[in-house]
Length: 114
Length: 112
Image (cartoon, rainbow over all chains, first blue to last red; front, side, top):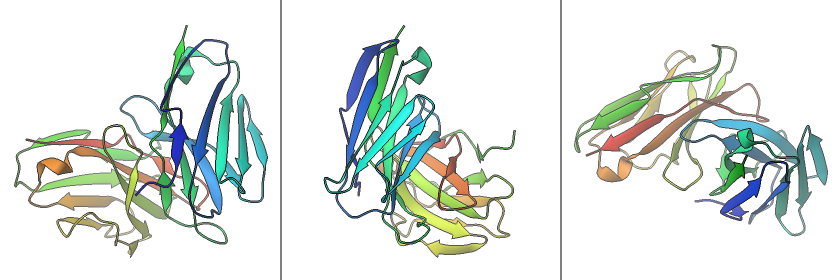
């Protein structure tokens, strides 16, 4: 079963624009992670935000987490054609240092048009 | 290349046949995971190993699915008596902690 639900399902933007993707989840979490998947390939870890954090940055990525609303957003600034991929949020509902089981959403398919 | 590798990358089999996939994790990673991903969905967790111990297998989809990691290094995922509904991408990941998982390129299974 999938806990995370990304929104929108698909997003098409021009190169240089910002892209925002949202993720909602159902149960309490230890942390939330974002992964990127290029067409037909494995996933790449982008960023992790813990339940006691509200915002985190990594390069052109900004992630926010609102545990009261059980939601997260991923912002990619100054998008590039190479950012074209599917983006998934994954929740870890374990305690302490985390658990082995990540629950992924269905993903947002981002297309960046050169 | 020191990433996670999976073999084969593609497998086409007839319904009822058995298939086995192999995963070689990053060498220093003691944790290994298997996921299944169907079209338009995110990965679905199947099973988890810490070293050679399979600590979670209740999420394997049926008793036709089994996984091993005999010496705590590479792992295999076997599907017996394949069905058309088993067609999917099977992903392996490894990690040294619970913070970040490193995924392989996956094995795409097509059952005809």
